[in-house]
Length: 499
Image (tube, rainbow, N blue to C red; front, top):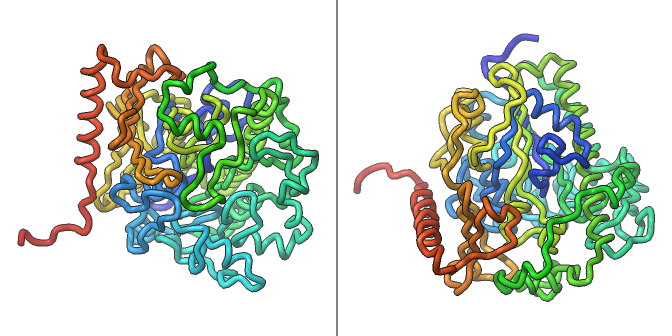
């Protein structure tokens, strides 16, 4: 096959997958041989962090290389402005085929008129049935909308090929009686009709017809986002008694901000309505239920891994592996029972903000390299631009990782920033600054905060905020957070003259 002047790019993204949710990260219980292969043949970043632990802001940051306070999608339900220059649109201008398969979520699920609208897709004749783009710079789109839902183009596929599977999505249709574990059951949806399988199928079909032009593909799996509902046989793949138990310490929430206890007890009420209200009371969650959630979560990841394997084998068979940059990551992590909490929110533990990040490009990167320096998902876009020889995106906050990927440097960021504006409790803007040794979670306008010594307390059990003996450390981190915020203020539109 003729070589391209520019390499292909496959960005494989999952949703809500923790950094330790792959075997290559040192987890002996989970089986992810295909994702591990990317690490073995490429580079694994052990300290990669999302810029926001919610889907839409994080995904928008990956596609722009900018923090949420600059690109504007500050929370779920806030669409990315349609005139935003994204990595996909930028590469399309460079002659790339641009493709999205799976979950986009740069627009909103709960609003008619969006190609990701639950309501529009549930109509008898969905208005988007014949639509396949454009979408934020992607010229071709095959969309799976939501989680554990027969929606989007995926839903149309089910209606035509597996209509009997549509009634098997709800919890009431589970293969076994649910145990009461938080949003967890064994799905009755056949594995051949599952969204992860469909995304693998669609990707292989694209590779069959990709042609000679370089391509940028965003292959975006909606799992392992809750609900934790793997199909058979993956729902039986992990014995709950043999998975790692969540990191918990009795009484650890006592010195945390008040919303931790409210969430733990199921008392947090959304200002947007009951649909966003926590459905579980973690104060009553048993050890067996926590273990079931972990086992099901691992099962969902193993199904994704099998489809990643199909994609990697197709690249091999078509002679594309050497010319294709493969990136594997997730938009944010998952608490998964750590600190007695499940899901996500204003809880910036590493379980939630640390994600897998793997790069493979045989032409330029040596295999088996593990880098411990801190990096951010906002670094993906500038790195891709650097590797393919494209100009930078406008006003990027990220930095190219090429010096690290090529083995020329092991130094990451001295600090990473994570930001969050919480929709359950409006007016609780939270920003985190994390160095290799310290983490500060700063709640603007609130009398409380969090400070952790990551060297002495890597599990973040003991909150040291406002300790007199650490006043200098805390003040230094606040100043560093202020610097990062101010220096990454948005500067778009561009200034075109001095007056």
